[in-house]
Length: 498
Ligand code: SAH
Image (cartoon, rainbow, N blue to C red; front, top):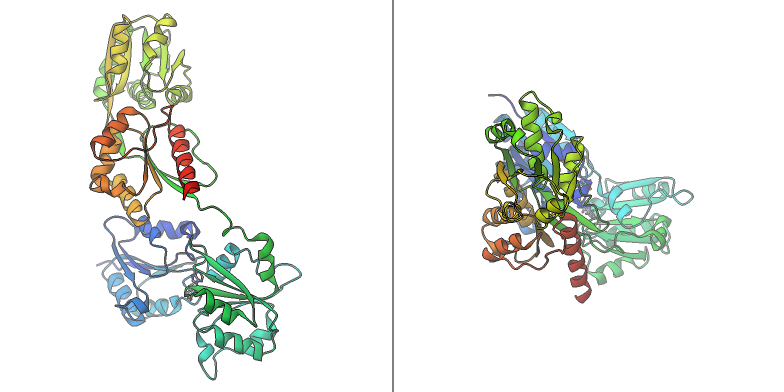
């Protein structure tokens, strides 16, 4: 059997955005993930659904696997031919025992790769507003572990550390703060020197206390600081008074948008972390569209109900050895800005753009004096509203079920898992089918009861309500951007009340 490979991956200190791209790539491909308790569980959402995920609990929360057991587990899965990710907090080689794991793998002949991470001593001071080598204040930094402060004699030459480095960054130091501080004072550091202790750095729950070497032990105890925490000693700590940024910022709103709409509305807003998932896959009905194209000389106008319907028509033209010149002489109407933009990308200009939702399409087409018959490419199983409106306005209509949408099981399962790991503040649904598919994948509407729910329009609202979900937001305009803005405003209003 082929030997597998073990990736010793640094997860960063907490904020899930601080893992490397290589780290994410390894996680996505892993068959086995062995994670430490300090790793942010949100990162496990990158692992594939079929992966075996093992999380090593904190020692104090037992049952705890010893380092030997972890080494054996890695070697066992590696020799069984698996791609294994060993996910470790911060950087695997900085106080992470990654060296010992690499040694064990090397001795067992299991190939491995080390993917560095952002270590706590780099990221945590940064998130606390402490530039560890600020010019003029600090030209040398020492990273040390407080773990051995109790040992006598210590493996660390505390005198040399205290004298040699302007800034000290101490891992594993809260529990032994008294000992660590005693060592530094004994080695000649001043009791008035500034100190910061940062608990759960880069996580939303980050807490920082500032003190001096003289009173930090008492202040940390009074604040009840617990591991994981990092201690920073040096004049640079003062910089925090001016440039602390993370603790002052409002937490980002986390919004999930479920939309298969193939549009390109910009969805980045400051203070909002948008996760966009396409719950449905588009399957073009090629044979049906091809047959309709053969009768193209019988229509005078094409009304595109969606961007996907543009793709279906142009795609079928190209696939049959033709191109958009075949549409010369026809009037082109687009329902919604997204359909118009997709036409433009195909170098076609819509003669008329009806508002999204399309209720007024028929009137607008009539006002513009377009001639029938009208070819109406759209999603199969969609609403009849457009066709009915055109017929009422006196047009001969050829509805064309140009594509269908089917639930994308993988995308849905990933979105559901991300929501379970850390519930989204709000979820916006852009289609009734997408809404139903998501709720089915999540189990039922209870799974989203903690989140604010938004529907892009009334049909989607009805589908959500029929499934038992409480809809809090329906925007005035049926666009994804309006849905996002509506959800964001409602969350902000809610935060004010709380
Ligand atoms: N390999 C890790 C360190 C593991 S040792 C890294 O490179 O960061 C565990 C210690 O790291 C903790 O006791 C604490 O001192 C520090 N640490 C890790 N994550 C931290 C966080 N989010 N906030 C503060 N300290 C952290």
